[in-house]
Length: 174
Image 1 (cartoon, rainbow, N blue to C red):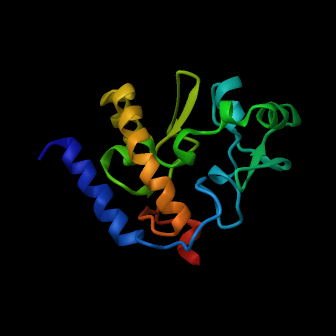
Image 2 (image 1 turned 90 degrees about the horizontal axis):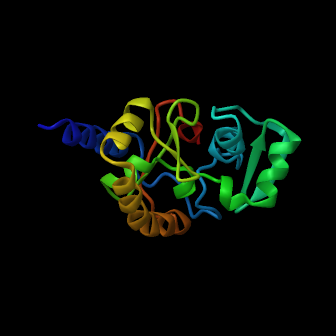
Image 3 (image 1 turned 90 degrees about the vertical axis):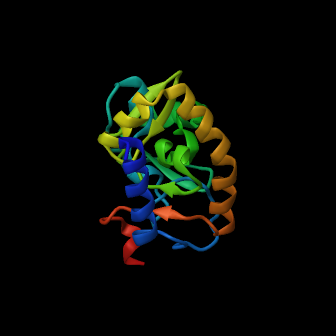
């Protein structure tokens, strides 16, 4: 079995074991915590301005697309508020690689598995999956992800999405 098929099989099995239809109809397609915080509270602007992952703070927050976004500073919050589309992660902050493997929303590791490509932020399940996504060709991955995202985004909003949740996901406790 090729490495791609092996990784795909692992993600699908994990999705079925941990995920499934675990959320009701959502008001947002953004990857949020149960408290409504986007991408676990990581500062989306810092990926662009500091070229690193930085945890945000509730002190510097902004509501957009049904989610609360946290930032490390008022300056980053204000940059985001002025042009959220420029800084928000693609695919609602869900795993870019997972979208190339089927119609499901997989959680991400915003600290270790991120890529800024063509001035757009992409997140992945973990560093190993990110490496695979990059090796497979970012352009192809983005194109495949965009096609799949149309369906997955609507499934999330309708409450019909399949999720791949990490074992430590706060959603598992609900």
